[in-house]
Length: 222
Image (cartoon, rainbow, N blue to C red; front, side, top):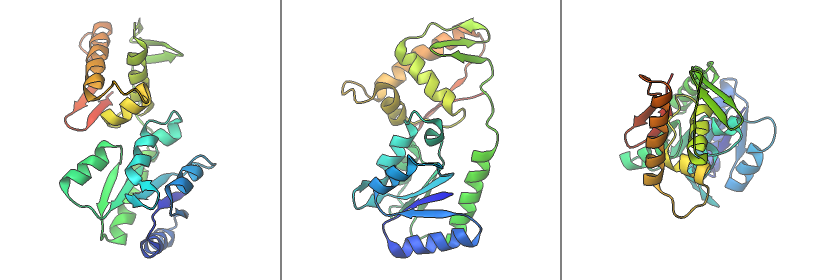
C-alpha cells in the first residue's frame, strides 16, 4: 500500500488514479496529522509520497521524523517528495532530510509510477548485511573484537546499522541520537563520527565501513 500525502484534490486524484491503474493500493491523506496517525497504524505503508506545502506544516518535517524513528519499518520507509519548488537547493535539502526521490511539479504521472516501481524494487531487495558486526544489546563486536563505545557513538552506529547503504543525513542522526539537545549541531555529529570511525579501524585494521557523502551525510558500507 502507498500512502499519498497531498492537499490539492486534483493532484491527489491524478496520482491515485495513475497508481491504481497500475495495480497499486493507495490511501490518501491531506493533513500532516492524519498522515502521522496512519503511519502508526497497521499495516505500515510500503512507500510514502508526500507534498511539501501542507495546511498544517511542512512535509519535509515528516520525512526527517521518519528517518529518526526507532521503528525500523518507518526509519527505512521509502519516501518520494512532490514539490512545486524545483531549484537545486530545494532538491538537495529534500534528499538531505531523508527523501529517496524528489519530483518537481508539474510532473508526468507515468514518470511518477516508474519512480515508484524503481524505488519499491530497491526497497524490497534483500539489503546487504553489514559483515562483521554482531550486536547484542549495548554490546557490539566487529570481526570478533569488542568495541568500547560511548553512548553517543553506540547510538550513531546503531542508526547506521538499521539501514546499511542508506545515506543518513546529519539532521536525521542528530534527531535520533541527540534528540532535542540545543547544544548539538552538524559539527557534533561529525566529531563523533570521527571518533567512531577511529575505533572501528582500531578493531578491524584496513576496514573503513563508514562512508562520507559530501554535503549529504553518512552511510555504512559492506
